Length: 415
Image (cartoon, rainbow, N blue to C red; front, side, top):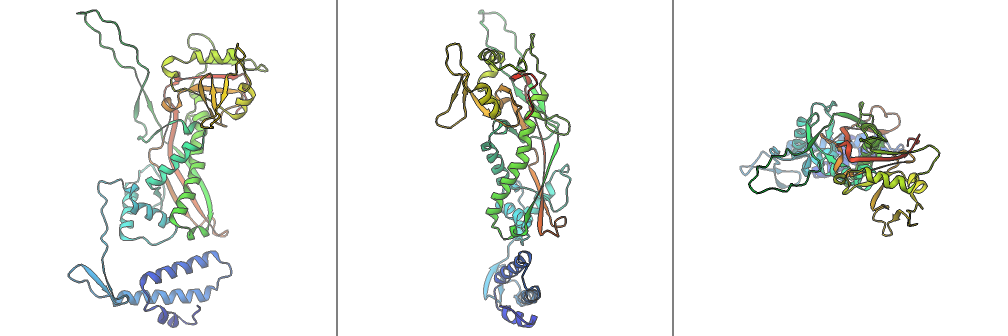
């Protein structure tokens, strides 16, 4: 209904519960933001009436009783004051209070005392290298887990790679295949063998993505907005990491398999098989490539290639006994196998090139601080959009270079 004066609106709302006043005020704000034909003057009169009714209700509220509860004269009910939690010793970003606070902040909604306390605690503990405004905060742990989970189903090497959540510039030990035990002569001294341990150090590189959403997003539920946000972050942040796992230069970004490893096609350090430009990959080339991978690294190894390479180079290829070397998976649980090794399709891999290795053990990415997200309405003010900026500190690289071998046609075209 429309009100002609503020007093008329005040008289209508002065006996309403505060919850109803807040819900109506939120509905009016959403209508102003999304409806170009809204009667702004009438809605502003109603908002002012609601504000005065809210202030009047607070003034009329009785003082706290000895039991620690308040008597609200507007509703006629007793209610206990909410005491803000301290959240000490908790994964604050994983609490329901922080999840609600995070999304309510992005949606422009009011926080409870506990939600505000959780939000403030996370912002205060935010890593200093996340250079951003005070309005930014880390996405909740539940959302980050959903992003990682979705990345596992998006395919590509990022779905296979090992995920870390470690501080940058710290060497992380990586176990390599060990040697067998030796036969021992009774009574003879045994020489202690030092374990073969490699290490990897991740750097801190920034990933930034800005995407815009209509102001209608403010009318979405928290669950719906979380689902939408998880899809966006998976596509932009995890998609960037996936591309870097293969072709990253290592300069201001992650380091990929292609650039991190020196590919040698002959000699004692051979780790690649090159096929002459204009020729086709043969069964002998495939067998030679498999033979280059050391036994300790071959367990769990998979082929990585793009879809074009699979069907142009391997599909229909037969061994010396005329048996196909690529066996498709009829249950569609995977793409299929080449000489017993599963195939992973990633369109970031160059045409006519294939890598063989255990990506789950020896290819990794690090996302130490989660993903920082903030919103702004200033840059898209004229278009009625809200901009969201995602910022992550990340790195990726092969953990052990000798764990991978390559088969390719010379002058392969980059993806």
